[in-house]
Image (cartoon, rainbow, N blue to C red; front, top):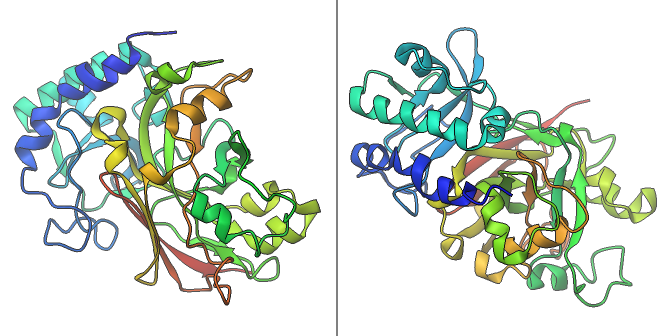
Length: 365
């Protein structure tokens, strides 16, 4: 294991841009409707402040007239550093493809050393800082290498609320180990892109706000006490689910109902581990402006270190792997009467201290 990886994420690469973040964006406010810089039209109202000065927001955006995807560093005041353009301006070889978040993550310490040098120069010169207007946010990892790992029943209230509503009534008590399943790679969707809904397939589209972990280095049989060493960062995720497919078809096996194309929006960026205080994070979902879910990370039954340790037992995790950590109570299918999203509904998912994504349900044949 690269024992310096976590220290790198917590200190060297992140600290390089710490003064850039806080110096430029000292007056930025959270994405709660408060006054703040209005960025990218309806996509981002304001950029929430990080929990610590040494974190970074790394996003994938379509930039320029041709909409070429690239990795950007997002600053507090809505300015961004386009890694590809800035590397060219500085005549700096990054050692990884600046158009790929996965390649940045896989580049390890060497890549972060280059990123640190680029960020320091950008902060000093300010010539490479760009406005976000015109940049279209994609998922931070638009094409995952592998399925998205997910944790089921990870909030006690959510487990209890679903007892009477779900099909698998034989499960009466919360398991002693995390419940894992996966979502197909084609579920990945952008933070502000529409979620397709084919009503001939299902009319029970449900929301599930979740905190996503992004793995930073390869690991197997990871000890729980060292699990956070393997975290690259965190993002906002929604495990959007077709309930009738999940519960009433295919023998009650979850994979298909969870894996409909576009039913996994993520973003708007990854905040590196140093910029997130998990104990302060809240997981929130709103539909058409009405709050449906709101819970603290502290209410999570299996915390991030336990999830990583259990998932990696006998199974290798790779850089760029995504783990959705479970949803709190308040989902639609367990309500009385049940509630499901329909064409035109807007699903807003927030992780405090990280950001907000916003997706509209769009009917398609």
